[in-house]
Length: 104
Image (cartoon, rainbow, N blue to C red):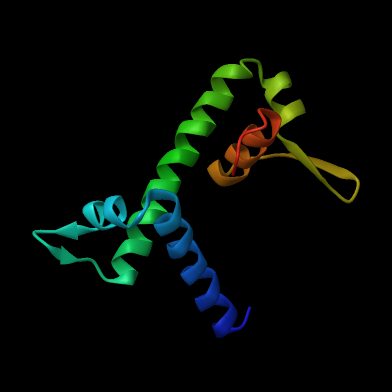
């Protein structure tokens, strides 16, 4: 991925957060004592927030699919002729949201 594409992805991520919360709420969340965080600090905070949501969705998935067989059936992928069980929180959370028709 080229540098410009990476920067545009980060900018889009910031703008989506800004648009979804509105200017007032965005800066209330991303300021301390009236001093605004830098874009890099905001991106780190958003990544932590996203990881927390992924962990919560992964925990919910493990509770919803109690047996290992049910979990492996819902949270597996094929690579060639082999089937693998998903292990990363990101992948499990994404599949759980797809199964429950929730936004990513």
